[in-house]
Image (cartoon, rainbow, N blue to C red; front, top):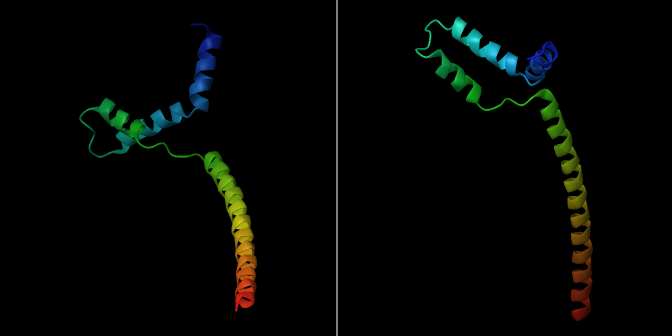
Length: 98
């Protein structure tokens, strides 16, 4: 493998957090008072845990949910206005019927 390909691969795994996750797993093994019987199983278990969402992902979700919330608030306002107008219309029709 050429040096350029190796560097591209290293950049790829760094940018996707692979090295950080592996380093964290190794540090957990190193820091634990009682070492796991099978280090590979321990690392597999750590890596298979639910993916922690990044700040960017959470920020995007917050923005999307805020926009959805605004849209829904607008719909609720419109429905309340429609409801009020319909109640007034019903009351008017009931008065005419009496």
